[in-house]
Length: 314
Image (tube, rainbow, N blue to C red):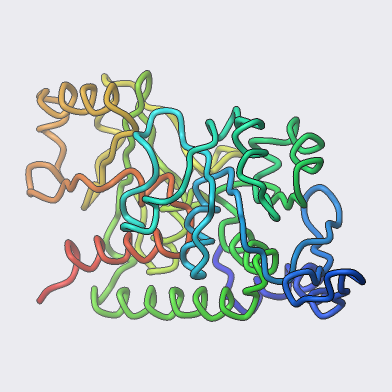
């Protein structure tokens, strides 16, 4: 299911369109004191037109803010990852960590005196009231499958609605260009495999990286279309069923140190070595923080970089 940036812009038009209805603090009267209503997963919230101290509680929100030129003052981290994502560069150095995605540190957030908090109903719904008591809070509904809609909503909350539309359109244009460079992308069956501490997953067409593959026009192995599953983000595979992760090309990553150790063990075995992609030298290890946890327009661009590197000719 591929949707253009123009279509997605219409999906969040209500939240973005209300931006013009700003109102000023009668005392402060400054541009920074102006607010506008943003419609989101938990209702409607008045947020600053130009937020200055933003706290983000999911990895996609870090990507959203920095992609739009805003450095958050605080960010929650994923449990198995070490600190904040490195693919976003030196800008993350000043960001304070405020707990985990699933367990944000409310005291640490309060101490940062945010004027906007951005999170996800999927991960932090039970904290919404407490967070809203600290600062205006905007939640997106889901993660992954709705990453484009989420980015547009994040842009609206950050006062960067048009910039978000432009960045998303630019990403989609480049994805098509990469597909053209490949020649016949649909003919290549791309397998996406992720090792976690206690399981191995294959990723389907409604995962973040799977959506990027679709935007490029790349084909997927039948097993990873997940046609018989309601949840088409991912499915689990045991080490004994490695044949199910094969494709013309395999992109593989690992989430956390324990997962990296499992990846090393499995990929050293004969079941992995006998995969056709592995025999052909077309199994590539890629960064988990871009392919899996980034879930934003900059991370998507990094995935395009990898595909361009490995699947196009010089």
